[in-house]
Image 1 (tube, rainbow, N blue to C red):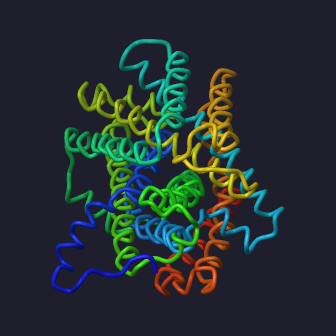
Image 2: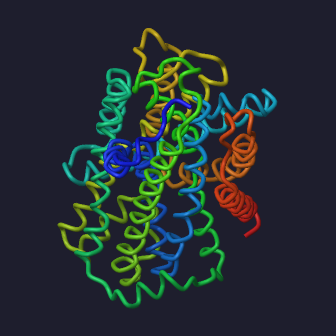
Length: 427
């Protein structure tokens, strides 16, 4: 073990102090899940189906928290990223397939997110969206290369605050909270093809493979930032550390699903209520909001899309770079300078540049999100099986395997994702 628990007389004080200090990796990962393409998915759900799928936020919260907690534990006790751990249990060719699929899906997702951010910025400032696609890509790329991990993590923590735009928007619009509570607590089973397809999209958007890799690598970066540079020094974690991270991840997952809830609610109370059910992009959602929710609410909704894009895109590009670097044994880490991890940073730049190209060749953002969701939907359950194998390996996990409850929750999530993957083709 690296650390021991504090003496009993100071345990409570130290625990509270450590809790506030440790909050970050789980919250950043949770907030990054609400990227512009995710916001589009939730907006479409609210516009098409009203409040009938609000209950999904209660379903996905514990499932997402269980998966991300397991990934965090893997990173904390092994001192290595997810791909590095999967290498010990999977055939090399299979891991390479997973990593390449992740890279393709993330690049498409970045393109969709850049398009959503640029459209929103055009609405706010009136400048052509293509200018913003390039500007945002350059700014994010510069920050990723120039700033070290701790600086990037600090910036991302503050960016989490932009997501409060969506709960505020919902309260500005006004609602019948009695009806909303009923819709939230009593699930309505989907009946139509559209309802099933939207449910599949919500699951695929909320529990995404890139978050698995990012959470695990972020734990390793946190330990490096704390001075634990060697692999041997990073192995193992105290019960207190694991408990603190569980709280952090739980808060992040709650926050992510709360935002999802309020985006569905806002669009249900405005667009669906007034018969606007066929939106395809975040821009259409924001423009349609204006006459029903007012200029302030529409502006808040739009500004949130730009802010969360700055949070999500580094996560998307970084998670694929970590996975490739660990698989191919490259030097890697946001704590390193460009000259010490050229291949790692080059992949981040290449992924972002390809996303810009996709936007300029006129890729349809909705189709981009769809194909990204398809790849993620097919990839996620297989990755979760591999994660379950790693998390239950006592030797690999330094005698600290996942708890039975955690394992059971992730197994349930895996089954749900397999059903969702099949439903993409069957329903």
